[in-house]
Image: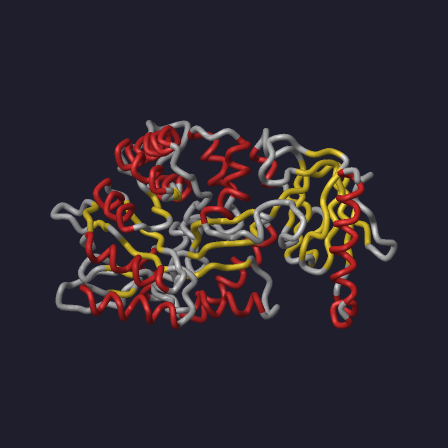
Length: 430
């Protein structure tokens, strides 16, 4: 039997199996997407003349038009001039924050009512989805408790629009290391959850899991050195324990770490990703690559905060912080570290997530590398084997853009079509 014949029969069987179930037949809609070209999230070459068949919430078939059967009852959506690709997967966000040039982090944590913060987050989730981000890892509510768990549930229940969320609740920090800070005699509310030592860390990690955390985030260092510089917070044994307890429940750990020592400890402990990594050394990046630990470099957050302080890019001399970011990013690439698309959005406006990808290209990635990082790359880092590519059986989380993102990453700003789980949430210019 020819390959073409096998592909056609396979696609027909998938579609038929969805429609054959009595309940599914009443609700499942078959949609045929006909773009100009397809980036499948993996293959460097774009596919021209492809159709993508969606049955219910999953991709039933994808391939050349003459090999993919079109059920007669299917709804056909033409996407002329557009490139279809997997929905983007954002790896480091904070839906409960908004840009610091609007309100400082301290004031957001201490002064803004929780209801106001959640209302902003609802808007942010919608902007994120319409920008083509169909999955987002939210790495800390910064004083808003488990509001991210509630947002995730509201999205899953169809109450509000937004991406699929991976949430951590409050991050875990060592006593004395995190803010907000004020007069030493005051015990101000913190932007994360404090825990130390064996029993306390075991209890807090398990409690967070029980409250709905998909992953655990820990601050492996913070700006608490004698002169205000970043220094490690948790010991090697404490980090090992956090990872051990989280992993025993099937969950991974993300570690905030700027310093080389904190990055080294977190890597040895077995975290899944390191966030920021500004002071990483070649030796530390080689260790990360050897152990398969990903780096979310958060380039956009660094440029945003620096610009809020007065830096004019292209006019003023490059600040040391940006120089360090570029050096670290290049060193991570040279070492072969898996690079995560995650910009720390919330520090800068939600919906502007693609800025991180543009900076990744500016700092040394090719557009193809950036496009893969935002799709199949992040899916692999986060263990999401049901998304991140245009392939039969995966979730129908798909977007279409003007242009070719594998050669021009700014094409990902021109999102004209968004589908999440087989439902069209955006079509046309908005």
